Length: 102
Image (cartoon, rainbow, N blue to C red; front, side, top):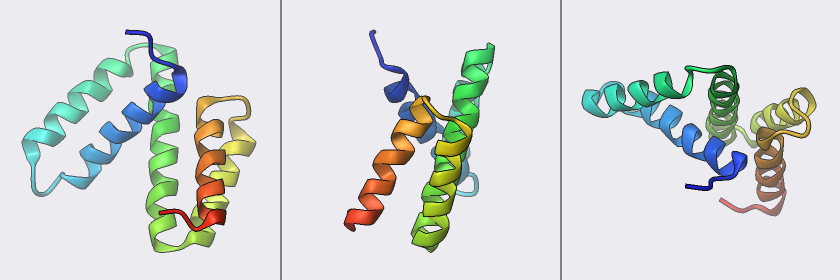
């Protein structure tokens, strides 16, 4: 399967979100998510993908609570990870925030 780095990052972010969101209610989902994250984490590129996915997820959660805080976190991602899939996704999400998209 030919998946872009940005698409791969978005998929890993979904797994990160599932592992956090369902920790109290769906332990089987959390176990499966954590198993997948462990597999991705096996190499340096995978570790960086997981780390960036965690940062994006943290910014997304912050945005739901405070758009200003989410904006700041997305800006940090762009500044600290320029020319990365995380920066691409962060820029798209900043545009969504500015445009009022959900």
